[in-house]
Amino acid sequence: MSAAGAGGTLWGSGEPLDPALDAYTAAEDRVWDRRLLLWDIAGTMAHVHGLARARLISGDEEARLHSALRDALDDAAAGRLTVTGADEDVHTALERYLTERLGEIGEKVHTGRSRNDQVAADLRLHIKHGLLRAEELLVDAAGALIEFGARHQRVLWPGYTHGRRAMPSTVGLWAAGYAELLLDDLGPLEAARALADRSPLGSAAGYGVPLPLEREEVAERLGFAGLQECVTSVQAARGKLEGATLAALWCAGCDLGKLSRDVVLFSSDEFGFLVLPRSLATGSSIMPHKRNPDLFELTRGRAAEIAGLAMQVMGIAMGLPGGYHRDLQLTKGPLVKGIDTLCDMARAVGSAVPLIEVDPVACRRAVDAGCLATEEVMRRVVEGVPFRRAYREVAAAVAAGEPLPRPSDEEILARRESFAGPSLFEKLAARRREAEASVRLRRLRFREALDALAGRPWPFEALRP
Image (spheres, rainbow, N blue to C red):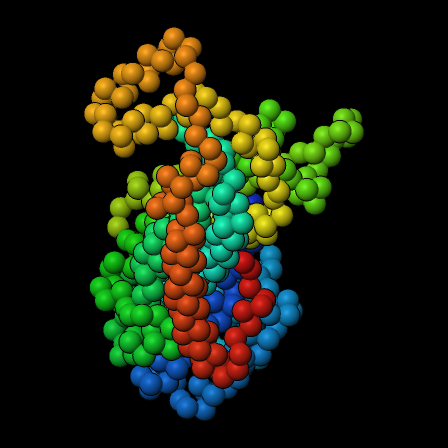
């Protein structure tokens, strides 16, 4: 008999499973489970070690299971092992693989666990890896913006409020602002990753098992920072963790989307501040002159997509009582897709920013007299005029159409030296380097744990993102 047992499922009762029921309950889920296969192998490797430490399997059985799991790791990385239509889920696929090779020894692998804690562990490992990758790509994108801003820190253009020209600013300050936002976005991602960095294994269906499982050692082998100590919290955290992760991804997606909206607008013919090279633009099937900013339009749209995925998961989770419910299966796809989407967005923006060109003449032309009104107010304040009086005097002059003194570009830039000069970019670059080192260290620790678990380099290259 296969690992799926009578009826073709792990929980088979002997009756054949209705194909329509299988398609409705599992067909789409198999797509997402394929993305979790390597993590299910990792969790099973650690669990097998824990079973041996608890003397629930022998040392020889542990060795044979570990060897078969290493083969499974190779086969999964190469695409030879996957979740097929004959498998109810990723856990069934792996158990089938083991029992086909090891017989009754393979049937012992589910001792002391449930698919509930298995999938919780798989998802937490996927979140850890995915958020580390997102952080790496955001750090890269922030670096590209810092370099772009430093190159154009003395190019004047208008700052806008309410969609209207407000005050003089610089291209450099615009890029620096988004760089800082992306570095800020690492905070929510790190918070979500910390939530995920606790092992649920040993909680089984959500109420523990009466076996002497080595939960702490299993968690350590998987590179988790600790345990979900109370077993009843494991399933109650499902949905909330996925929602928190997507909310953190949305923070970064929002900033990448806003940056993209700016690029679309400022590269339009009506503005002309930014110029997209042909490598970043697409054409039209009917209008030969068109250079469309598709990359940035799709990034703008995908920011909204992440928001939708977050709301989808929150809507599912918020109506559930404690314990496991099959509804939670529907949070898996949005989570995986959300991580993929944010990583794709950050990678695209990070690659595109260095290629954007700036038209300094068009930028400077837009810094007109109205945009300089506040400059005149502040000039008078420096000379000793009370702010409110200076404001009223300049407002009256503007209303009467009187010309205002026009400062030189050098004067405008000098007045902004304290917050828009070279020191700003030096501080941002230092912060980016610090963030890069921190993410690299966390990645190294995770990799070292999984390498040690497998006894060989873990196949991160087979994972997406």
